[in-house]
Length: 206
Image (cartoon, rainbow, N blue to C red; front, side, top):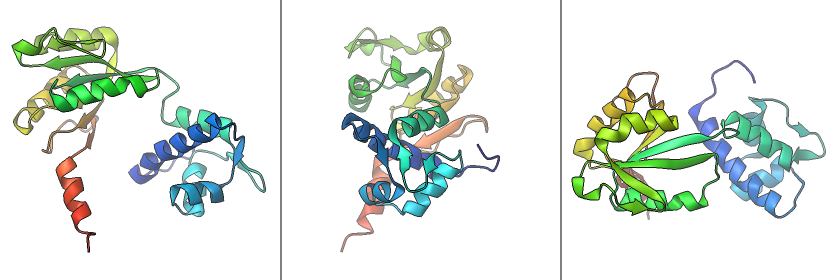
């Protein structure tokens, strides 16, 4: 891998490439060109080649990319060649939906623990996961080696949950609450805000 800083845009495109490559592999398609990738993903083939070239030379001129090999390499780049444990706080409707989505995820990245501050929810079962009270979070996260946290609580509680994640040693957070949370510089946060995404889509309406 080259030593220059990789932009967030490049990193966000890698899972898109990986998903399509997995689809090709399921169809027993052995090779694919950047032209084919670009056409199917509505991306510039030159951009795809540039993105992948940040991490190495994976293709062969006139042949393209070996699908299985490129899948392996992108999984390594995204650190999906190892088990990554995820914890979720907020067992409401959205939290439940994400826990139920566990069924469709690969074994390398799964939600393995779910927590909620409401006493009445402790002990509930969601897709083979038992909702735990917040006071058990640090012990559970440490025991299971959880590295990523998901926040699906109301906005007023999001920062408090983020603080607790940081105290538990969580390294990255996916925040679904409609509020910006503040964490130390060594903790990565991605915000998934439905409202802002819908509002930005409205700009493009006729």
